[in-house]
Amino acid sequence: MERVQRLIAEYFNGSDRHLRFGGVAIADLADQYGTPFYAYDRQVLEQTWSRLRCALPPEFTVYYSVKANPNQRILQFFLSKGCGLEIASVGEFDRALRAGCAPARILFAGPGKTEAELERVLEQNIGAVHIESFREMDRISAIARRLGRSARIALRVNPTEEAQGGAMRMGGKPLPFGIDEECLEAALDRAISDPFLSVRGIHLFIGTQILDPAILLAQYRKGIAIAQRAADRLQAPLQTVDFGGGLGIPYFPGEQSLNLEAFRQGLVELMADVRSDPRLTGTQFMVEPGRYLVGEAGIYVVRVNDIKYSRGKKFIIVDGGLHHHLTASGNLGQVIKRNYPVAILNKLNAEARESADIVGPLCTPLDALARNVMLPPAEVGDWVGVFQSGAYARSASPLGFLSHPAPPEIWVEAGKSTLLCPRGQYDTI
Ligand SMILES: *Cc1c(COP(=O)(O)O)cnc(C)c1O
Image (cartoon, rainbow, N blue to C red; front, side, top):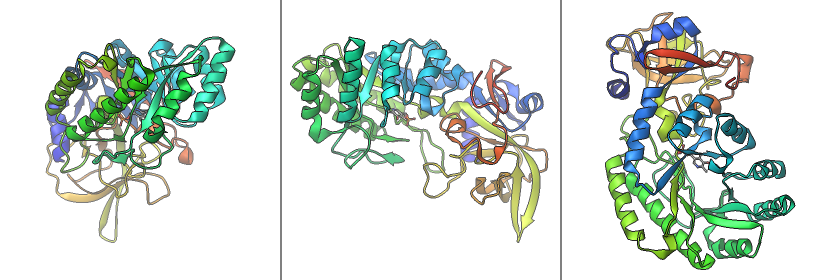
């Protein structure tokens, strides 16, 4: 509840008893579009975007990570801010192109890229492919040879040390991602000797949901050290150093927002240390956040359909669940389920005095949006909102499980709403 109040104070002013989302009463959205639905608030995107942009030095470019939320309107928002896009499949490549992104502003990272996928993006002259294995280099080289031009690549490096404190830790251990740091020189030599591969830089992505700026900064320092080694081997300055994503947002009690002022300060110091290094002259530094940029801008809204007690425990049964929002149900990326910030959206200032589980309509005990959460007494017809549902929510959910229609996506901007994706459709039309 405390987290919900903070979010409302920060982003959703004008709410009293009823939530106003992007200046629109939640009841109006529910009446117009029905429940369950996802809504995204442009103003929140603006706020988080400018906050992050202001923390980054001018030499930094942002590549929005499409998998966090691949909705067209969201992609267009970031393109309009001058961002590039980071993709992990040809499906995301197509979405990026459809949103109006120039291929030169797209990066393709991720393990297991198929021959057909590589062919497709290289034909379209993608900005760069981030290499995850030696075989991938061979494949790209062969395709580039057929196309008669060299392919721009960056080496994704799996570093020797681990960044602590993220939800998912990548680095310092065996991984399917990237080339082990121990093989950096060998990978560079392989690429340098190949006229069809043009090495632009290195890429590092160590973990997601990091809330401590010191961990991010340690990771970026590690990236710089690897970049310097790579430039020595290439005997040329690097064109790009990509520090990856991973900036977190607080979901759970006890978590603090990422301290962007400390992050900004650390980056100023980092840049001061490298500015005079000839190996990093003219280098474009990149970050590719997903969650941080969109997580707080989304809400998932469901309607209370039934309330029942079983052996003294209260269950609030709503019309959506894990098939729409797997992460909130705790079945993606969590070992022990913790509750996302949830509230009864038409009883915001009522006293939270009853503990209940909020469960969905699927025939599995896994289908709980929140467990043992303190709420005002709920009634059939109330609306429940799961906040911070802009990232890894709808698109990370098994929308086909139990054959309920996929929830619509709604864009809210300056007191007006627009339907982005109708109910029952998977993708934006
Ligand atoms: C998923 C992903 C990201 C985005 O991660 P966040 O934690 O959402 O910032 C960035 N880069 C790559 C390569 C990814 O796979």
